[in-house]
Image (cartoon, rainbow, N blue to C red; front, top):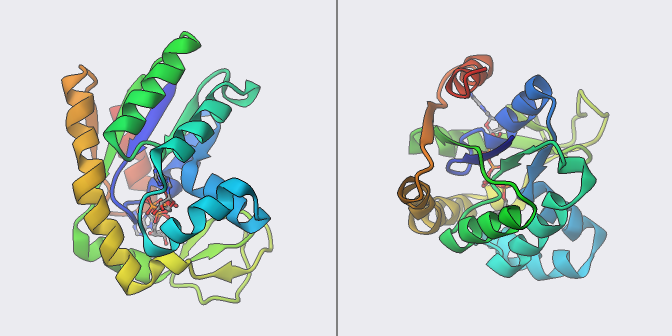
Length: 211
Ligand code: AP5
């Protein structure tokens, strides 16, 4: 099964992708994590992506479609995947569809996590993430230690106020059209109220998936 997670920055896509991956026994593929790893490793892809990411702009579709092509044709996703933030423009949605069709697959479910803007800004401006495993934390100071892997917690550069404002604007103008695109292509978008305790949101998502 291939599940696409949509939602604004800070809606909890990454948090819920981890929970769903664990519950459903499927790998999580987060293009943001793939890109941050490429930036850290100084690869060509990372050098190309860095300035877009720091400003909170979208990385060019060609880069994302290259990543999706690599991961969706790898043995790791043979039985399916949870795609976290991997489809953020209509050309990406179209390109993913083409890549999947070439290997006899399709997107099976689309989940949209919805949270109001005040809550999104609060979450992003107080978030730290583990430099190692990328786990996000609320209300933990930079420099403290990740409970999962012992890595150091840092603030993301794109969680500065100016970049947060830009990311929300980019979401409205470039990613929201993807919701209509799936609807027009006969794919029901399952809307999840993503406000409330993390485990309750997971239960709502699993319910929407019929699990
Ligand atoms: P990416 O890393 O995907 O960032 P994002 O979409 O902006 O999403 P976030 O990671 O900020 O939020 P999230 O929804 O995953 O929430 P999280 O679980 O972390 O992408 C970064 C950049 O990479 C993009 O800006 C772009 O430049 C580039 N990029 C990536 N994919 C791309 C693509 N397909 N096309 C083009 N460019 C691309 O939670 C947020 C915080 O809230 C955390 O602190 C968490 O602990 C907390 N939280 C989570 N759930 C709850 C809850 N229920 N209640 C209270 N707090 C909660």
